[in-house]
Length: 81
Image (cartoon, rainbow, N blue to C red; front, top):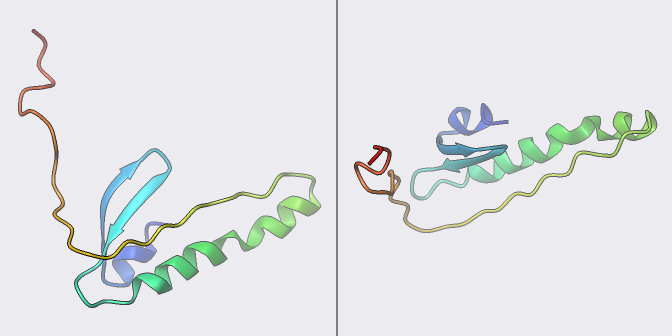
């Protein structure tokens, strides 16, 4: 699903497990298009249910405001002592 974010003018800040965080420039509303594309991408759920499988569920959150992306942590935290 992360291919939709750059296509609509955003960038992927991080991927953690099965979660993606996409960021968009100020005053862009194209993130709503990405949300719709991700949600409608689960259209195959009807076929899964007919085949006896549980539907895939997703959660989508939208937050607005200033983002300062970057790595948080001590510069040498990975080094063994």
